[in-house]
Amino acid sequence: MGNRAPVWIFIISAILLSGCWDQIEIEQRAFISVVAIDATDNPGEVKFTEQLVNPENISTIAAGGGQGKAFRNLSGTGRSLFEINQEIAKKSSRVLDTTHLDAIIFSEEIMKQPGAFKDYFDLFFRSKTMRRGIKIAVSSGDAWELLEVEAEHEKIPGEYIIELLENKEDLNVVDLIRIGDIDEKLYSKMSFPMAQIKKKSDREIDYSEIAIYNGPQERMIGTLKDDEAKGLSFIRGMKNNGAITGTLDNEEITVEIGSIKSKFTLVNPDPKQMKFALDIKMTASLAEQAGWNDIFKREVLTELERASKRKVEEMVKSAIKRLQEDFRTDAMGLGEYLHHYHPKLWKKVKEDWEEGANYFSNSEIDLNVKLTIAEPGSINRTTTPRGE
Image (cartoon, rainbow, N blue to C red; front, top):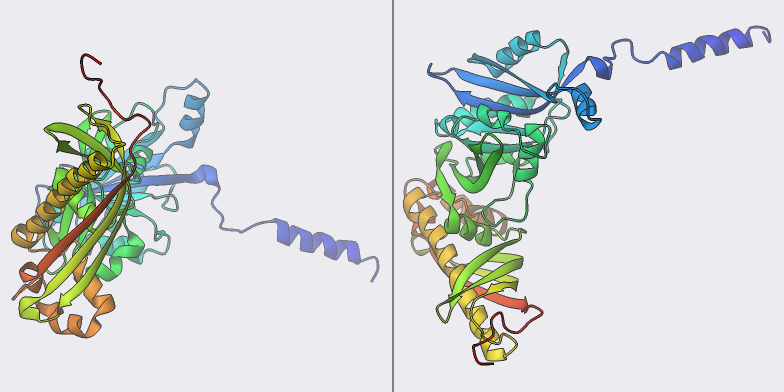
């Protein structure tokens, strides 16, 4: 028995160290970074584009050699994303791998077709290999073109797109929608905002718009941009940085937002005369000032805060009006607030919240903004009057 011990140790070691019999080596995998879904000229047919990463070319580019691209885009058309993906797989010499998929981009044309987004989303939600943190965005124009944009400092367009979507330095952007967030919203027919991006040039993508998705209609209803987009960010209490420009004594002032907190409160629960209070608290610092007002004087700083507050109020009211009157779509989260804090009332009004009686559009929203400039800057004047 003692002589057999080395033999058994050898056999057990061989089994444990052999690895999985069906394991696919990393060199045999083609990692997908971003995918794009576009409409075609044929009704019911879509174009599906996948961006594959070439690890070898990334390393050679970093080392200063090699001329190959660090990515490769493969496309196919058809009625089923699953079948198109199988056809794309035949074009690749490696096994397609979605474990590093970071974003899914739907074209605006797809998003505006009733039910299309929900149908095509189903593939990604059901797949066991899809991470719940994959980001979803809308493109203005063809989504596949975004996968061709090569930014100056990025080797892979997909990485550039992800960095844009995760940017917190702009008030025009909105909280990211991810696969893990969206399933309940879609199947509960809830409305929500989405990031909307567009190709600006061969080397640049612009992210300054917000797509508005109407849950009951199951389609994108429109777009918010500029001050309206910023107003929606204020309503939703976004943790973004950014700047707003107003006027004080007919001179421009720019303040940088530090923090935003927003809160809804139900004031009148009568569905026919529903009323809410929206409280927004913000802190900011002075970024730029024209003129020579001494901002270290309390009265001047107070006027500066009032001027900035007025600008915020204009933006928020503009966003509310657009959502209630033009889109008739609750992308600000009032319904979610009722669902969580007033479930009995929500059960009574949810069927007519954005349809029928449309209680959302007929609700009154009282706005209260409190803006504090916490950091006026290190100087008390930006311009010295002549003669001093």
